[in-house]
Every structure is written in structure tokens, then in C-alpha cells.
Amino acid sequence: MMRCWVLTYEYNPFIIGGLGIVATHLTRSLARDGLDVTVISRSGKPHIQTNRKKHLNIVRFPATSKYYSVKDRTFCSHSIDDWLAKNSYEKPQILHIHSVHFAKTARYLKLKFNAPVVYTCHSLVRMEKLSKARSLVARQQEELLSFADAVVVPSLWLKSKTKELYPHLKDKLHVIENGVHVKRERCSGPRHHLLNVGRLVRSKGIEKLLGAVAILSKKHPKLKLDVVGTGSSAYRKHLRLLARTYQITERIRWLGFKTPKQVQQLYSSYGVVVVPSPNESFGLVALEALANNIPLVSTRSGGLAEFVNSSVAEIIHRVSPEEIAQAIENMWKQEELTNRRVAEGRKMALQYSWPNIAARYHSLFTSIL
View 1 (cartoon, one colour):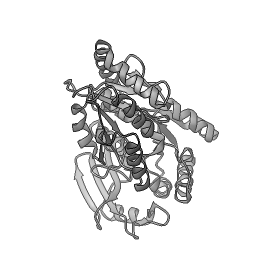
View 2 (cartoon, rainbow, N blue to C red; view 1 turned 90 degrees about the horizontal axis):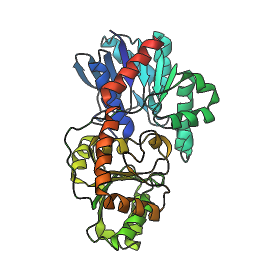
View 3 (cartoon, rainbow, N blue to C red; view 1 turned 120 degrees about the vertical axis):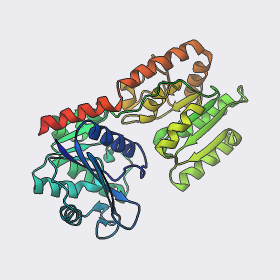
View 4 (cartoon, rainbow, N blue to C red; view 1 turned 135 degrees about the vertical axis):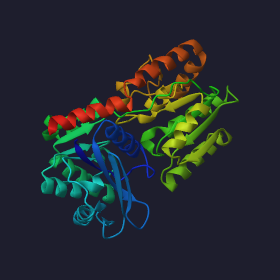
């Protein structure tokens, strides 16, 4: 049985975004697929937490000075390795890394156990707006990219961007998309009730979506938009001020952070999921909408283009308030076409079911070993 150690800062129930969702569900699927998996992650408590089950062991280390350096934003290799050795965890045959916080630990374990490293790169830090803190994370990611034996990215678009920034990685890049749980039943709320899910950052297109709501509200008095996600206090304040300027405050509900489980429970209450992002490395929310049988209005930016098309969604061709509003209106007007898209969207989502994605990772691990 293949022994795999998974190193991830986010793991259920401590999930911030898509990385944590993927790390959790992929790891569980790999364990069901027959791998002996040990997850090494962060603890929200001031002590080490463990959970040992058949094929899936979870060890959570606290973010204290012994196990984690706040200054360097990285876990402490020797302390973690010493604890695992003392508690008789079998050495890994392969290391699977999701988070740059474990870059130094991954390198240390690779050398100690002669175990190959597979790094799932969810996004490129160099493509974000860099600050002093982000520059540190970017350097850690570049270190991880350099010594990993294989780098997995979730889309051809991100593979292309990675090759542009790091040409020397081209021979060890692999595309394995993110997965999703597909629901059988079709259950959605009223079409005038819109949902947007994601981090509150400028790159998600939320400002343009508020402009679209302002346009649509003039003709559609029942229109509502719920926004799930959080961001910096300054940007949240900016968005609320923008909604007030557009005179749509009463049409917007800011639901804040929701756990992945809560988000899944929310989907069935909405008639449309809107993804106005001008830039996405994959676009997990759009795939979740298809898997939950909810009409999707979305751009095809970045990795979204690999599964979002006019057969499964109403396309936003340009990220502007007018284009977003027009796409939503088109979806409302074409009821029969929208219903067909929902059915086709579910078929599309089935290709990305977690067992299928886990099998591709298992095959990659086997080929590397």
C-alpha cells in the first residue's frame, strides 16, 4: 500500500478557500482509493491534535514558536519530524504538498526519506499584487516549485502562465483539475435571487457585479444579490459605500465567510450563481454551481474556459456592469435554454467527480514512484 504524507495549511474544518476544499476532499478520496494517507496540517488549538483512522491519519500542529515561525510564515521541519518519529508514524513513500507554508518541511523530508515531492499549485503568488509579506511567500513558492518532482496545476491556462514565468518547469508540469461532489436532485430558488461566492478582492469582479445589479434593479424590483466571502476591512467598506452610491443597499446581503459545508447548503436557495471574475486559475465556484444544478452566469477567464461554455452557462463576454447585466437578463428570458444548460452542466460536472480526480492523482503518484 502506497504511503503518502499530505502537507497542507488548510484542512477541514480549518478551510479558508479553494485550496482547503481541494486538499480535504482529494485526500479523503485518495484514502478511499487505497492509499495510506497521513495529513500534516495546522491546529487551531495551542496543542497537537491527532485523529487516527484506517488509511487516513491527521496530525495538526499548533502555530506556536516550536512548530511554526510567524516571522518566516513556515513550519519548523525538525520539530515536526521529531514528533512524528517519536509517535511511530511510518515514513512516507511520496510527499504531496498543497501549501507553501510547508516548503522547508517538504524539502527536509524529501532529503531524509528520499521521497519524491508532488506540489499542487493552486495559484501563482507572482501573479498577485506583491507586498513585503507576499514577496516572502512568492520566494517560498519558487523554492517549492524548484525542488518538487512534479507540479500539478488545475488548468491548462495556469500551466501556460507557469511556463511563462518559470520556463525551466515545463517538463514537470501536469494538469489535473479540481474536483466536485455532484448532486442528483435539481432544486433551485427563484431566478431573481442571485448568489456570488468568493474572496472579496478586486480580481473577482464584484464591483462590476454591483454595477450590474444597479442596472437590473431599475426594471426588476424583486432582484436580490447575496454575497458570500470576506476580505480586508478597507475593501469591505469600499464595497458597501459603492452599493450605497448605486442606491442598491437594500438589494445586497453581505453574508460574510461561510464554511464549504454551509456554502453547499446555500446553493439550493438561489436561482442563479454569478461568477464575474476577470481572472481565475480554475473557478471552483462555477463548477460547484454546475454540480448543484443551479443556472450559471459566468466569464470564461483563465481556467474557467476549460469547462464553462455556452452549452452549460450564459457567458459574460466582457467584465463590465452592462455586459454582466445583459447576461443575467438573457438567462432570465431564455427559460428553456437555461434548463437545458443546467442538465448539460451536471453532465459536465460528473467528469470532475472526486473519485475521477483522485484516480488521476493516484496514477501520477504511481508513475513517479
